[in-house]
Length: 70
Image (cartoon, rainbow, N blue to C red; front, top):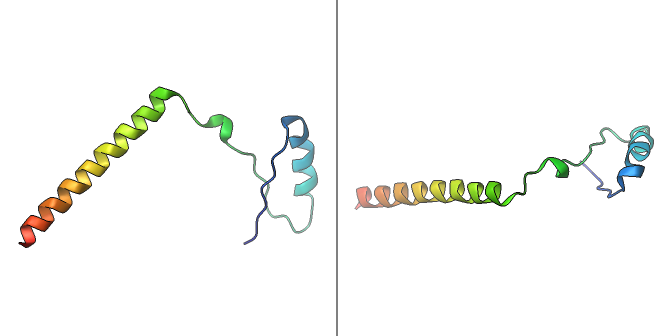
């Protein structure tokens, strides 16, 4: 599969999406979801905490498995 990423101003986007989508070799055109991404400090901190808890659980599980093997 081949793809292309274009960065456009919002003013141009609608027209370009129609233009590009009408090409016979184009199967799909998508808008970026950048505006829907939550980049607030609280959200990022929450994600970091969630990932830290998952990592801690995996480390603990590995340690327990390693000790069980000995």
